[in-house]
Image (tube, rainbow, N blue to C red; front, side, top):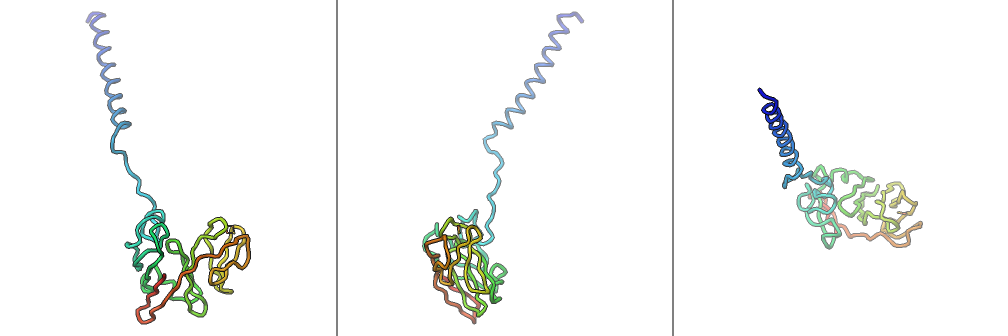
Amino acid sequence: MERKEFLNLVGISVGAVILQNCLSGCTKSSDPTPAVTPPPTNPNTGGTGGGGGTTTTVGLTGNNLLANGTISFSIDLNSTTFGDLKTNGKALVSGDVIIARTKAGDFLVVEKACTHQRTTVDFNADNTTFSCSNHGSVFEANGAVKNGPAAVALKNYPTSFDSAKNTLKVG
Ligand code: FES
């Protein structure tokens, strides 16, 4: 093999390798359908990131998200999602509200976001209040401000409980 023939052969081989690498690399980077990572699921709404639909939540019918309009829903306490509320003194967050059952067995539903800077409030069964761990605001059972810095009450929602069906209607 002469030197010229050898160089031509090597040149073609190197070119082929470079072309193959470029094509495979280009195919991956310009793929028009990149993998889609599903958004996290909010177990309390069955939707995504708190903005999803409420109709798929096991045990809940209606709307528990302010972004979807008026808060109005029913929950089934026989469902695993809301079963904790069969116990007096328990509470859980669902959508944009916190649902609490007092030690006496009454239900309280208020917006979950502290009116100071939107931290989710906690229910205190011992004194039937809601408190915010961020700056210490405390709200009465009906959402009224007990201690600041929050200056605006939590919105509360009327409830009615059907003990025969073990369902709670809110709103
Ligand atoms: S966010 Fe609740 S007291 Fe500040």
